[in-house]
Image (cartoon, rainbow, N blue to C red; front, side, top):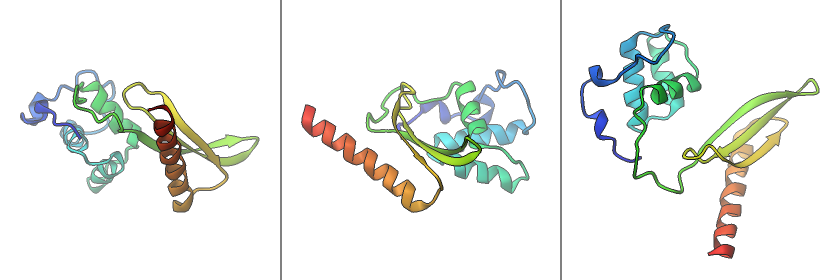
Length: 141
């Protein structure tokens, strides 16, 4: 992850004025922001909060980081993608939607819908994305 010089200051330098609700103690919000920007995953950052009895979802921490305006501004690797899965309802049935997104542009790069979730399907999703990306790069380079 690119270095972010704005993280070298104290926690007081993190501005949370744009956060509407303060259901989470401000100190834990600031620590979570710093941990995530120091390359701790959103899932692990949420687990950190759970140690203190604070139950939040990954998107909440993601929103804190964006509202604090501390995203790294340059040096992002062009091969960096964001991958997530979520459950959706279609015709009364549950399906898992896997998605790969370019975090710079929020463009969907690859999606896959599965009737269940497991590590093998997640691995296959990534393998298909990487294989397709590699083939496209080889064909058009």
